[in-house]
Length: 231
Image (cartoon, rainbow, N blue to C red):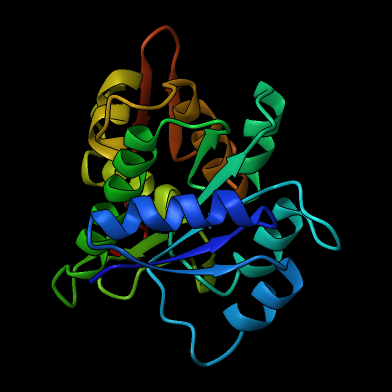
């Protein structure tokens, strides 16, 4: 059974989300204090598959909490917030969030997003050991869920990892934004604009100055085929 951690200082909304998940046989735990949530996540008892995270909370905001935990965990993080401006969503994605849903939310949409990310995370975790993609200085290990440039490890969110994996698997092929969205996000729910946001995040984290991820203006992107001089 999948396990979801709900972090929200609003007890009524937390209980509602928990009830919605329970009806779908998804186990959940509620923590209403973000500081307590941080301690729990850093403990050895943490074994959850996804986090639903509010943004506006006392003591520690959801964005601050996300930035503190993203380097240590790779599970999907979905922001659930009353903040609905585009800039709020962009900030959420840039600090490591995988998705964003606005309050008040539709229960069906919430479930679809949660299930989509749980499936995505499960697929990534169940790949064969030794499945490694290497292009130029970039190495992606599907089994260990690690990405390195040279010998330096690069921490990516679940969505960024799947995006990079899809691009590298199709190196040399120009992919439209629609193709990328369909194959990485896998759901009609969401904004295709998140493709560009996640591409930017990947470039920043890879230290890529259009060397690997190439923009094909008016269409989409492609991952360059680069031959290592040592090969």
